[in-house]
Image (cartoon, rainbow, N blue to C red):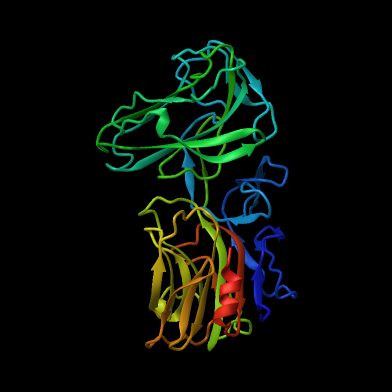
Length: 393
């Protein structure tokens, strides 16, 4: 198989830069931008702060890291380590949290007055806006022979779709012994106040069990993003972006391959288009672009010069997929996880002057908000067997 002209396999970085493995002279290093600090799970399995404009090589999935690229978000919880309680805990202590400090909260009695509460003022969000509450939990002790299955009590919701704890889903595991969960609700009427409540200590009543909680987060999104710590007020995280221009000598405008191994951040439909592109510069026009990505209904697809190739809906978009689009006049193909999904055997002209690789549509839109483990550009065509081998999981 040919050697890629550009290969970004997350391993090295510095402020404003993600190093590419190829070319070795640094020409393919991506320019990175994020106008705030952000958190990742580091190699030691702890939540770690990364400074403004510093890329995040995230180890939350275990094994080799992925480049974490997220949209902007706001954490509405005040005092996120312990949660903003409507009443002071009757009895509590602390334990080591996912960030390695002694700031995870352990309620020692099952008291419904111990709760996190957030009031969303009228006209803050529109009717139908989804809110996601996420938290970290660790079962510290439980009596022998008793199975602890409970968690936060999330209910008594005012002007929000009703939700019980059983609707919560686990989204991360074993972050310094803690698992992370999320629960999604929806605003019924945006013209009136909404009240969200989460009660702690639901498993404390089971004998003498104890449970630690940390990292409470409420976002105006349909899925949880990485932890945004807060203290005396709300806090936000800016979106990530990465791209590189001036690559015309490494990108063929005749025939080549754009490949990526990536996982979506959510399976929720209607969230956003996510694309990785080769194009002529800063244009977002499809006619000037080689594109692979995920639609807002989670179909993996590709486009060559504005001609779409048949897409496929994976069983789970949040697992890692290996995707390659071979582009060539009237002979472009899309391979996903070792299988050819579609091709263009009609007019599909490769754009001339390709010179930019970007985790976006070319003009900053439709940003490729994903976890990316591998991105490659081949400036020559590959055979079907090579494409099958390249994309096989």
